[in-house]
Length: 333
Image (cartoon, rainbow, N blue to C red):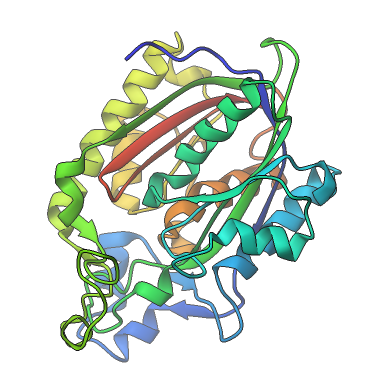
């Protein structure tokens, strides 16, 4: 695959939204055969946010989008396309992006979803960037939004402790030249023979909803945890090394790495491999758990709004998820 060129695309604004309801580890201790220490040791998670009645993927996505628009000093009329990365859509169809378009009262611009699980925001970043690079679009609203609590089996102690709900949004805009803010490098990958390692088996055309699928709880997330963990560690190592090398940089050039928040041990392994101090490897999994496609944009917005990054900084986004999919993006802010 040829090395992708730098793209004249910048981040004009970001936003995030999370539900008010918190599930801490004690919630699971009271209901399952587990302990707070067991959860912390294996995941690093202390609490996660989950939606309440009346909240959904679209409501979270819309809330995050409004914040991003305000941050970019734009209105919905300035947006040329809307992309939502999610594996927990508002419904099978139409796309969640269309619900967001309606809620924002945005113009009749393209609006569609992509499903690349935890890598979804990075997949969307590449798609949106090439749309802008074509010269047809100038501002694209990209959202990663999930209500993982809707597909989580709260009787499965190995998976239910992992997931949370949330949304993050970014406005990607055309920019002149490559000396200032731009996307420096990006990679996208997939390995389809790993589909069964992390999936929701039922609910689609292969295994439609039925009494059997409900009784066997096949409409919830199923994960081969040990196998996914090993592949995630390896892919994260390879992604980080190859992305930095192909861009002609080294770890010292990075202001911060924002990885998908899947497991604190995976993140720590990558940090040690890069020999980065803790403050240059972002984590918020302790507070939000694994929010799939929302994970990276939540972290990106938090880093921008709390001063962890500033204009001119180079940051690395990296994710691994179901599909199996993985990808990275090297960005100068």
